Amino acid sequence: MSVRVAPDQKQRVTLTVNGKARTGFAEPRMLLTDFLRHELQAFGVHVGCEHGVCGACTVLVGGKAMRSCTRYAVQMDGAEITTVEGLADPGTLNVLQQAFSQRHGLQCGFCTPGILLSTTHFLRKNTAPSEAEVRDMLSGHICRCTGYAGIVAAIMDAAERIRRGE
Amino acid sequence: MKPVAFEYCRPDTLAEALDLLGERREEAAVLAGGMSLGPMLNLRMVRPRRVIDISRLAGLDGIEVRRDRIVTGATVIQADALESPIIRKELPLLALALPWVGHFQTRNAGTLGGSVAHADPSAEIPLCAVTSDATIVLRSRRRERRVRAGEFFVGALSTVRQADELVVAIDWPRASADEGHAFEEIAQRHGDFAIAAAACEVVLDGDGRIGRLALGLGGVADRPIAVDTRELAGAMADGGTAGALARRTAADLDPMEDHVASADYRRALARVLIERVVLRAIEAAKGKA
Image 1: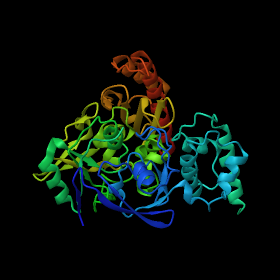
Image 2: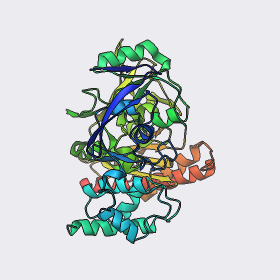
Image 3: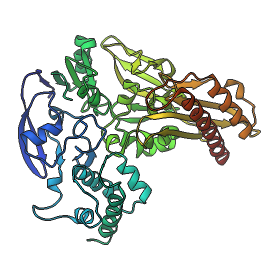
């Protein structure tokens, strides 16, 4: 059914976020990023540049990594979203997160949720990436702390551990 | 960094989308993956009254083989195009260019038609369309209109699309089996806008000389440009021809200057990239002969 929402009208939007149906309200201009944070309290979605360049807001939509700052909540009704909160049970870390912790893949942590989600999709498509392929994928993220070396090392480690079945 | 307030419309049919567009004309913007329009909205470089979301519209996301043409729907997602066996086999130039389009994370949402309609002067998909002499298919309530890519792009972020027209497809000539291809670009960071980009298609004649050569350049003018290469028919398929073409073409360019690169630097990059893509496309064509 076609949808029309007036500029100042709040539209009901239902998403599946980390496996749970969640509903909130959004004006047409509300970014998916802001909807996830302010309406659904998914504070692991970080707001960086707000024009699709820095990668901090990256989430999985239907399993695919994409920016949430250049999409609008009203567009996404019915979508299945994974945020960093959905990667592991509270208080635990998955293999990728453990590798980031062990290999100094983060310092301030601002870019980390987006990078973890991009990498989750990337490693599903490419289970044995080269370092060049990892760096190419990471070109869609900006990290101002690590110089990327620790991030690359963590992803290479995690890929190997996932291949071994951990 | 938030858009102006706009009305959001998500039509179910193409006819409804064209009605919505026709009603508002200049005050409407068309949204698909949001990788070009999203930044423009958030930065308020565009302030539409109505945004028409075509991302779920049926029938615009197909990749079809039609005899000697390949028709890609406007909302084909760039990542899907990159993984499409049809595109890899039948549109090898586009397949070579797609890894340069934005980043992994933006290709998962960005569309072929969105990039064409946005018309960034350094964008790769418009450059392929111009180089391959593809046709842009437009629809409005009034008519369907087909425009050759070389005439579609008229300036930076500017095309001949009328305000009530929607880009519905790109109609590409199917590459012949003996065609060689190459694509190269230089950007500050892989996935950033190209400072300069070059694309080449070559078919050799029976004597191993140049039969047909198409060369396109991006990032060096306010739109992607096709270089006139007609006089190259019959030339030797070698480094001498590639070098001479690169020098002559680069000398004639009048590139834009911006905070990233001077005109001289862009001209120098164009010369290097032209030589590279021509040589590489010749090698690829020799491999297929």
